[in-house]
Length: 160
Image (cartoon, rainbow, N blue to C red):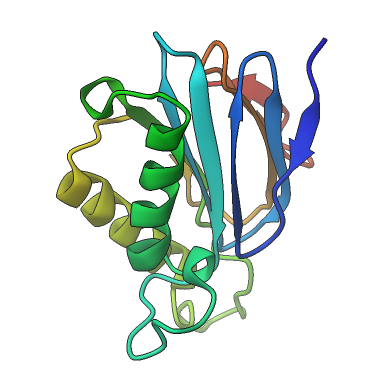
């Protein structure tokens, strides 16, 4: 029987099969899901911002550039092999816009771009992404199969 492990905002968790990692409320935030299909372990980070800048002493899970190393390290501690790791991401929406005005800040786009940069930096292939749009997402990541279920309001549900 699997447990559903909740990953909060600016948080990360790792798990072994048959557990499921879940995070809700992905607007401009990104859910980074990394999986070793042979060892059947994985992890999820719910990042809020692209880079920590000078704030590296704070919450490392909050930023794409600092969360990635911590997430990979924790997954390797569960017995994963780095060369087998694969990633899926979701989120990165533009949640606020004003008619007749260009989108402000574009945090979702910047988050998605930085996550892709960080995955390349650590050598983990990105298999699939569900990013952008103007709607929030809730995701469930099965660390046993690597399936990522993405649920949205008014945009349905899919497994990627």
